Length: 319
Image (cartoon, rainbow, N blue to C red; front, side, top):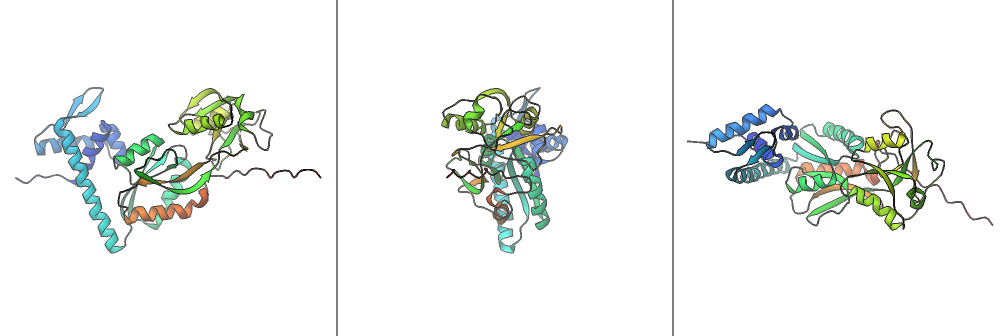
């Protein structure tokens, strides 16, 4: 008897296997949770095996057979994607699925405009976006959940490659009444004694703290948050200053309070914005075209949603 299943059902199976949750898998593949549950149940009936153990309040755990099925399903989906990529190469058409991850700290100010322009240029591309921290991006690329990712050059593993789009130096984010708000620039030593709101994301937090260490001082961290907009609101409401590399086009927190961005003096390592891909993975025409598109639209890190901050010119010595 011939087995009947679809690639879509295999996609749902892999998603549930990766996330251990129907709800989260449904969010990732952009369908309803009942549709994912129905697909899993249909696969179990078709193959007459149990793929998952259902544990109330603890999600789903793969059975031994389920693990083997998920890995085989992943290989089938990869082969199917290669057929689609081969078709695009032969016809020269940019189309099909494109799964893009983006670092959550700048997803709001970069991805939507890029996606809109790219999809208008290539309407047959099925664009899917995900916002994660850097650690989640690295894991997702290795599991082939994403074709590529927009992030920073933070400890890029050797099995991945980084296509640089531009350097973004760090700057101080202050509220209007901050004692340093009137300065043209500040040093890490100037900031060290003041209360700091740390943007506490994997890799990013270590980078910010290293700026103080390299300057021979330590930050006075009084608050931590993983959300850049919460950080900006806390700063605007005078709980402390922060440091960031992305400078949104608006100078306000989301509650309307004004913020002041000031360059930090010294030879500080910038964050480098770019695209991360798996090193040995074949890049489809759609992936290559998106990388070229980003290289054009984000040349030197310039983007409509990002304001650049320049150091004030040095005052020439008196003669």
